[in-house]
Image (cartoon, rainbow, N blue to C red; front, top):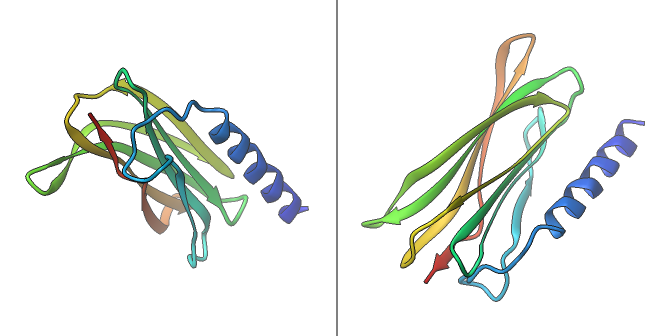
Length: 143
């Protein structure tokens, strides 16, 4: 049953991500959601995604799948801009939950810059921090 629930949640995540508008101008041919399968004992997967429309409307997404139903966690999602060779936070959002956490946020960005989404996840068992992970999206240049 546990594997079935994970598969269903993964399929729902993919559907949600695919139904988001993908009209960004990316360094690669098409924007993509970056998701890692973790070697961590408490995190099954973490994902980060970014698209930017031709009008500069950024769609930021994050996801976190827990390995254990009893765990809880918090994701911190940052929209970052490259400034003088360093990633700096432009906007940030936080979400908490258990089993599966997903988040979508929107904001406008300035042209002529590189952007990415950086996600940090903290996992707790009975209130104690037991695992952490981070993930970066693809880098998108908005002209």
